[in-house]
Image (tube, rainbow, N blue to C red; front, side, top):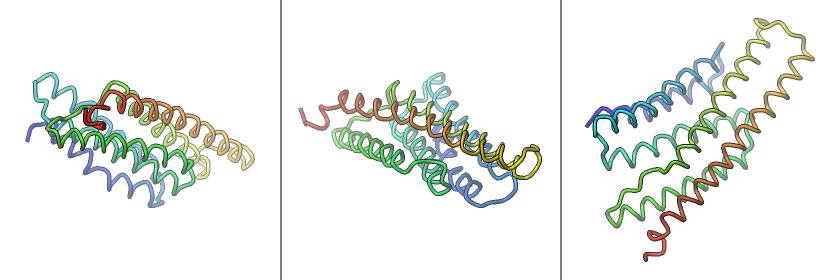
Length: 197
C-alpha cells in the first residue's frame, strides 16, 4: 500500500479519537477535538498532493479518499447535532447527497469504472472543513469564557453564545449549498451510470 493510501486510512483511524474528544466533556476538549480534526484534514491535503506528484494515483485511493472525507465530516456534523450546535435538517441534506453520490460511484464500479471526486466536490469539502473548524474555535472561546479565562459577564457570554451559534449555522448552510450543488453536478456528469446509456 502506498503512502497516500496510508494517509487516507490514517484519516479514517483518527475519527473515533475525534468523536471521543468532542463528545466526552473535559477541560479544553474543543481544542483537542480541533487538533485531531485539523490533523485529519491535513492528511486530506497531503494524500492527494503526494499521489499526484509521485504518480501514485490508484483506483483504491480514488474511491477511499472521498469516503474518508465523508466519514470525517459527517461524524463532526452528527456530533454537532448531539451538542445542539447544528440543525439536524442540514445533516439530513448532507447525508442524502452523500448516499446519492456513493450510489452513483457503486453503479460505476459495477461497470468497472472508478469515478473520482470533481472540483465541486473539493469545494464542498473545503467549505465544510472551514465551517467545522470555525465552530470549534468559537466553542473553545465560549469554553474559555465559561472557565473565566476570558473574563466576561454572564450577559456578554450569553450574547456571544447566540452570535457564535448563528455564525456557525450560516457557515454550515453555505457549505450545504455547495454540498447540494456538487451533488447535482455529480449526478448530471455521471447520469450514464444511472440510466445505463
